[in-house]
Image (cartoon, rainbow, N blue to C red; front, side, top):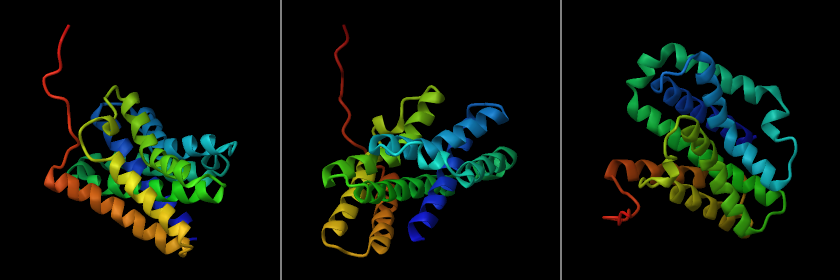
Length: 204
């Protein structure tokens, strides 16, 4: 139940961040909903495909699509008010990252994935939807830019794997790991921590 609740919380957070990005790119209502759905469900679909779970979980039951679609529509209607809540939007995105990275790792472990594979799948679950969103909006994916993003997701995935190896209760472990991801992501934004970027690339 904890895992399901966290997953829906992550869906709402990612759908909102994706829809807001679509609004900023001047997409119509259909485009906003599509980008919101893609951002929220993309990572989970990639996860299920990697684990051989077909059709993907989020496409088998209607609440996933309904919750994400409704969230995107709310953002489309109230985007002027939501856009003013910049910190809230960043927090929502960080929350989605934490929830999906840790829940994806847990699902991978339960599906029989090795710890190494589970970490990578968990990280991909967290960053996959955002990467597809950025590609749809013709932007360089955030995960490939200098901000600390994928590293935070990977840290949470590693914590879940460690908790699994120590046979700790999966629910509390997932919550703690997701909290760490959110904390690292928000701290990186606050302190403006960035991954190294090559300086002065040579031009032909």
